[in-house]
Image 1 (cartoon, rainbow, N blue to C red):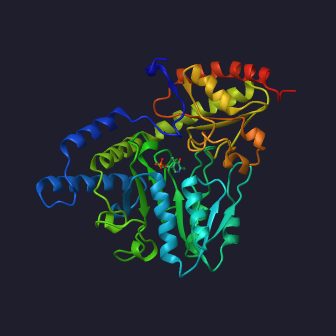
Image 2: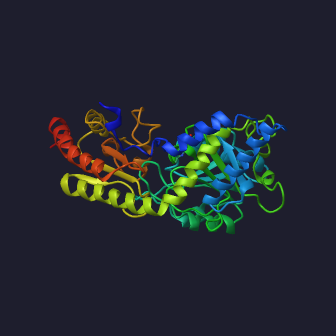
Image 3: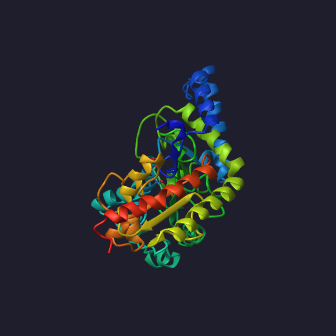
Length: 395
Ligand SMILES: *Cc1c(COP(=O)(O)O)cnc(C)c1O
């Protein structure tokens, strides 16, 4: 398969870097090698670049520049948020509220905390994948220190009622974290309007490099207010106001900022364009493939996410057959697609384990064209038909 002709429809797993971002990345690697903590001119150039990048990234979510903390990934940001808040507040309370469709980067740190005596309420979503804010409010106890609900789901694309959840958290004076790795750069997001205290994002989900992430930490009130409610999970030099020590990755962070600048400019157009393509895929497949259904919410979903169930067959076989046709898709989360367990997200929205195995995630992006979508729509129905003929599950 000619790599340049491969049709990549797995943008939720990761995105190709935008050529303009690669250019920035290369330029910074060559020209800006300094340690931003050094006092000399080379270091100070890096320090300036860092400030500028922080400013650009903060502006996408209406945050203060100094409330952006760079990390190595979305996973690391989630871990700092959850473990850092838990450690700092354990004398105040030991209760955390999450949903049952969180990414493993949120779910698994919570499981670790349970071993250390924390109590975690895992609220169930409805069949669209939506959490009910009233249930969150109903689960709050005197011991609740943190609510962590993802902004948009990586498998089914459902966007949560974050504003309502933020209001509840604020009313009860509870710290609110959201894993916005999928939403950041795809839909408008304002940390003040939504009362978000902590927000995780990752560059590689928006055409930036892998291995660069950020955690927004609201500075509650006075100077160094972060330190009042969260503490670091790593200790070293004083970088990132001691929240995340390690020599600053200037090229990666500059490239992240470039990626943010691009999504900022293109977001309204891309939302409209991708939503149209998304809905075209959904309606075509529902109309042309029997026993098929949409997973997730029909409208309250990411503009680039399609997740469909096809009865009687395995999603994995569909993915492999599409790959032979030069089309890259997924059964769900990239992290769990190598395991045999059905997706916890699809089970959470009420699918049987058998149906959960028969799902296909198609996630589009900036470089997806109408022609590519057409090609995919031609190729998929005969694949489903062939697989169903061979399937022992077909009536
Ligand atoms: C991809 C993803 C992560 C992990 O981000 P990395 O930078 O790959 O560690 C966390 N949460 C969600 C919702 C994601 O989609």
